[in-house]
Amino acid sequence: MVPTILLDVGLMAMLVVVAFAIVRLKSLFAIVMLQGVYSLVSAAWFVSLDAVDVAFTEAAVGAGVSTVLMLAAMLLADRESRPVPISRQIGPLIIVMVAGFAMFAAIGDMPAFGDPHSPANQYVGMNYIDQTAEEIHIPNVVTAVLASYRGYDTFGEAVVIFAAGLGVLLLLGLNGNAGKWRAQPNGIRISSASAPAARKRPMPEDAPKPPSKPKSTPKRKSSPKTTRKSTGGKS
Amino acid sequence: MTPHVILRVVSKLLIPLIAMFAFYVQFHGDYGPGGGFQAGVILAAAVILYALIFGLDEAKKAIPPSWVRIGMTLGVLLYGGTGVVTWLLGSEFLSYGVLTPDHPSHGQHYGILAVELGVLLAVASVMLAIFYAFGSRQPELSDEDW
Image 1 (tube, rainbow over the protein chains, first blue to last red):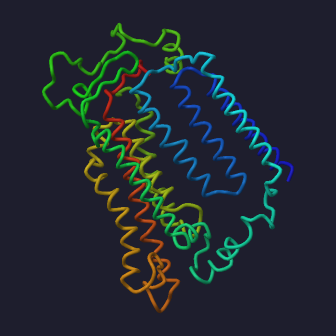
Image 2 (image 1 turned 135 degrees about the vertical axis):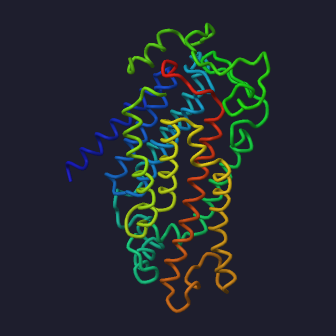
Image 3 (image 1 turned 90 degrees about the vertical axis):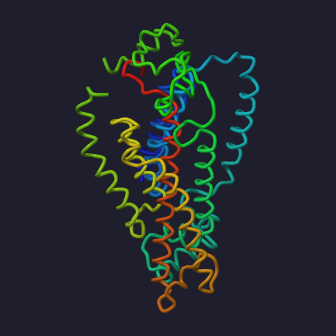
């Protein structure tokens, strides 16, 4: 039992360290990568808590796909976050402290981990575990609950995912060409006319071509320090 | 993009394995951890990895955006359609036992299979659609620009 607790504490400590690093960093690229690390560590922690299905999802979605999506979104924005003045940090700090204090105060009411008398381990959950074997005949109770007993919920989930995809497609277009738009990542101006999806269309004279050698663009916003930091690993 | 020989070779080996693993997770979900949601994300991750290594245009040739659009609707329709079928057979929405009246547990198997397939299609397509939408909106970066 003791090694498991050590593992849990170690993983939690790693989560805290990564979270502080995310708060302190300014380079958005590093922050996105650290968010992937955070997801992967929490996935490991879920495995340690025997929630393998959740860990699976966290590793695939959090560390995999959402990191890529965040990178793709970041490329349309600046590479560095701008510092926020102290006066605007006080309000959020108070909210976070009150919420954190409320959570700590609520810990006392939580059932112990694995407590057989906790609400989660009584009532309908026990019925699912008892009846899955005879009603559905599959060994994995999680799948039985997800797809059969709670089929409505999962249907709602599928519709929510569909709606999310639909929203993105309505806003951006499947080829990224919905509407007229302009972005200035890293000081390089791109627009609906210069994006790769729009290349086949005749290009207006004033629109800059997709920069093949961004090094020569003098308009770069990012300081040389971060440029060195972000490319340092590859040279 | 040409210099990354190792990345290209390794990912060429890995991408089919990742896709296979997605289907393993999908169809083994009754017995082990996994299911439609995880399988869909892994399948999308295989295509996204392909796009990251070989370029978005190549990925769009392999999985055209129109497929993605059809896939996301088809997935939700497959899930809802299973419910409608059970409805028409005279039972409640999404109670699969009615699919095979003699063996209700077999019907549960078929129902779960259909529903998970719908989730797989919807999730994989939506993930790819979001990736295509964001990824198409910027020019490709040279290595130095990262």
